[in-house]
Image (cartoon, rainbow, N blue to C red; front, side):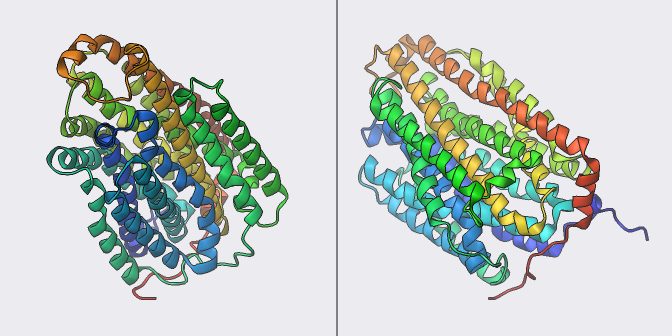
Amino acid sequence: MERATPEHEPLGKEVWLVASVVIVGVIMSILDTTIVNVALETLSRELHSPLSTIQWVSTGYLLSLALVIPLTGWLSEKYGAKRIWMTSVALFGAGSVLCGAAWNAESLIAFRVLQGLGGGMIMPVGMALLAQTAGPHRVGRVMSVIGVPMLLGPILGPVIGGVIVDNTSWRWIFYVNVPIVVVALLLASRVLHADQGRAEAGRLDTLGLALISPGLAGIVFGLSQSETHGGFDAPIAWGPIVAGLLLVALFARHAWFADRPLIDVKLFSRGALGAAASATFLLGGALFGTLLILPLYYQVARGEDALTAGLLMAPQGVGAAIAMPIAGRLTDRVGGGIVALVGIVVMTLGTLPYAFVGADTPYWLLAGLLVIRGLGLGSSMMPSMAAAYALLDNKAVPRATSALNVTRQVGGSIGTAILAVYLQSQINDVFGGASGGVQRVPEQVRAREAAPLAEAFANTFWVAILLSMVAIVPIAMLAWYTRSRPGEYAEAHASAEPAAAPVHGGA
């Protein structure tokens, strides 16, 4: 019988066992993000906070994800992936319970940050486990497995969030995580091996941690304050941004010369990984920023309730569900760069008409555009990361995973902050600077201001479109790199061997 070529080799039982654990955890963290986005209007109203404050329920969560991700590579090597993964899931669960018990916007934001500290480690540790178990020659299909939660989140999250918000207390959007946490911990205790991911970690790069964490926080905080305090001219806006950029630059310089930096910035000097990092940064901003403003468009500009807004978001997940398995197989055959380039062009074309959305744009047209956007999304984010993994040896996977995930989450945090601030500015213009936040207004007021409200959202979509268009450049570079050096690409596929510990029950 003819032996299967590497790109046609089945994933195998080991990969599927690890995937079953990883998917449960990852879907929990991503589902939580999309559930909360649908509830932002309700949270803004019930907690009496403007969008510039309440958007930190999303931005604070995404930022705390980004802050902890750099640690995951070192922690996995030091203590083993199983222990770190289970700890992160448990911390996420504890944060969920506290979020449900929050008494005001400030306490909710604080508990969301705690929740994010756990959620931030779930994705990178899971991705590293799968990539090492499967090997680079099957990384495209592995990334499509990880992508399953990314497509289920947009389908299930808004719908579940809408049902919860419309039929019970908003607190249950957090309490719903508890049974998933229990299932995830039980699966991990039986499937993962205690030594998976363990390696010589060296000393923790404390200086790097002290530079990168406040640097990232400063940038996003300054962005969020720019609208509240009159734009970027206010010192409380530009001051943290400048300080954050300076700290990030100092971290980059430190990491370049350090023996074991928290994030190996030299990996970015490799053509494929550098292009993939730039692409995931921009795609993260476009993805998470749009997931914030789309439900608000349906609720604020069109007067729909949370459940209807969630259902109207589902077509994007349908498109991603169709595209992702196909994109995974094509990535293993022709390279992730080419697949991602086609995907980002489709995603941009699917988003472009939203810049012309009005107060009476047919829902069937918006749904069709979301399907197209989902097709592009399912063919761009994970293939671009898979293209970089295909050129790495297994020992570089944990820290490369941390590097790629931190760029995606930071991009998401900054994209969410920028779009929220810009949307708040547009809404303020509609109401003469006295909107008090993005909330559903009385029907008679909404009917009178429907056209300018829709225009405010249309103008905001241009920001998301710009992010997608700029992302075409690094993805095109990624496609060129993987196509122009076939020898290195093929050698990486042929020579790398899976280095994960055996998968079996117990510790």
